[in-house]
Image (cartoon, rainbow over all chains, first blue to last red; front, side):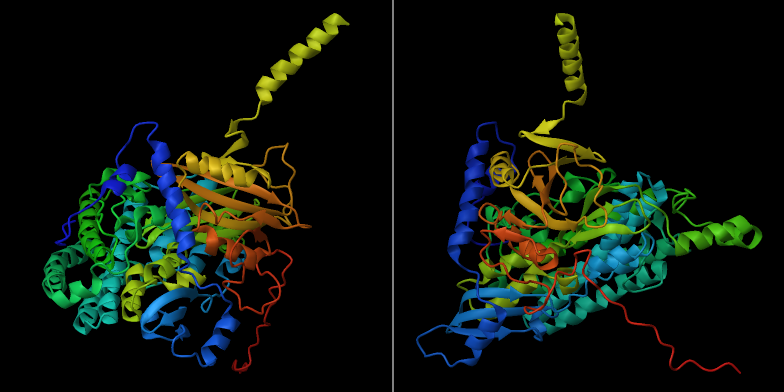
Amino acid sequence: MTTTHEAPISTDAVDSLVSPIPEGARQITSSDVVAAAQGLRDLGAVLRVTESEGLKAELEQAPDDETMIINMGPQHPSTHGVLRLMLELRGETVVRCKPIIGYLHTGMERTGEELTYLQGPTNVTRMDYAAPLFTELAFSLTVEKLLEIEVPDRAVWIRMLMTEMNRISSHLLFMATNGMDLGAVSMMLYGWREREEALRFLQEVTGLRMNHNYIRPGGVAADLPDGWRDSVLRLLDMLPERLAQYDTLLNQQPIWRNRLQGIGVITAEECLALGVTGPLLRSTGYDWDLRRDMPYLAFDEVEFEVIVGAYGDCYDRYAIRLAEIHESMKIVRQCLEKMPKGDYRIQDKKVTPPPRARIDESMEALIHHFKIFTEGFKVPEGEAYVSIESPRGELGCYIVSDGSSKPYRMHVRAPSFVNLQTLPHLMQGGLLADGVAIISSVDPILGEVDR
Amino acid sequence: MADEAAEAGGEETVDEREIAPETLFGMLLTRSLDQLVIHPSRDEYPGLLKTLHDDGYHSVIDLTGVDYLTHPGRSGVPASVTTERFEVVVSMINHRERSRLRMRIQIPESDPVLASAWDLYPGTEAMERETFDMFGISFDGHPDLTRILMPEDWIGHPLRKDYDIGRIPVQFKGAPENR
């Protein structure tokens, strides 16, 4: 990634983590990370008062020379949904902060225990509503791991194509909301305009703009429709020009750069200690992307770059996402070339219902179809955790099966939930107005945070 | 006598080699579908975290709980480990060796407490709060162990298997009558 910051790049600390270093040097890295954990603890950025105490403190009048506790949200346009921030302010400076979540909690992990494995994707797809295909994919991969089945090649490549399209739409949404939060309202309209084009393609294939329920255990729900290549190519031809417009509009604009550069800085060590993944971790210069480092699907067969930043600030996080759209387009283009022919779902009678035509002529097929959709298929006893790289970081799914047709326990490791923990550290000592830029750059999706 | 003893001894060593449990960092190691799982006890857990941290496992990726109330005979736990009602499952990642490791720690129902990993891994803060909220498992040493997803004054822990989730009867009030 090429950023044009004026300050010299100091990546010594980062290099020691990224480049392979000889045995023995490991201890040094280790203690650095320990120091980061210690530092985070000593920072005292997190406001540790309960919600009710915070509300009481807010209602009481504070003398002029003291700090003041105010609540931002849960109904605030800049908090991306129903996120509430309890802020301790001295003047306009944030002293401490505590994100309060749970306003969108609907017990989806519990619901997941009541639904069969075939119904599961309908539930999990509603978690990360900006990138629904990723949760479906994580869930399906975990179930397939427990079943010990391999999906056909075409299904793998369709999944890759669709998730990368979804990554593009998700990052475009980020471009839009990031612009909106910082007052670049035209950017909001442009971002949504392009996202709509990407969603149109998803709708063409899955039937829905979001909550697709398209990726299911055993493959995908339907084959790609006629003319899908033209739709993809139209999008791929249109996007570069539009992204260049974003570049002209924002990247070189002094107001934009002043609002983002050097705001909300975090180091790689702090990110690791906090378990942070995704663009947030990469913005610090830490070269880590599950698609390349722990490949799933067929990501080891495509060429793409992992985009890293250098400063770990809001501008890097914005620039990384913009560049990742280009990388995703690269992958989509390779999917177009390499898309194999064949089945779009596994031909294992246990998992896949019989085709529609068979139901009309065969009694057994009808019974089988009925059984799969009412009772579901049984999954062998065991437990597995499978993770993928969602637009927001590592998205994992942990399923415990007791041998029945419903998960005994279904847990989703949501990247936004973990990444949200950086907010107090990013915001401490900054201005309240910068807080808006910081929330936006973390890009939390509250449906995924609260589940 | 001597022969018998020798025989018995010989058999024992053979048995031992056959069933010698695999270990990692001195903990029992099992494989669940090619994924490494270790089974520390509650007391070994804090020390193990330290060892893992020094070994390059710099991130706790996930921490969650499982309630085995209605499925006590779970799979994947070595015979020598006493199973309890709750399990805390911790997933860790070693970025340099690109490896993952999962811990399953047995937590008894009578005393659902585990040492907090917050000291070494501040990122577990929200995850431990969530596990506390959903399962009622306390984390010793956690700075702010309050409910995170449920309302502050909520009673009960929703992901426990004996928590009544309740049902709303389906009513077809506005359905047109048969003609």
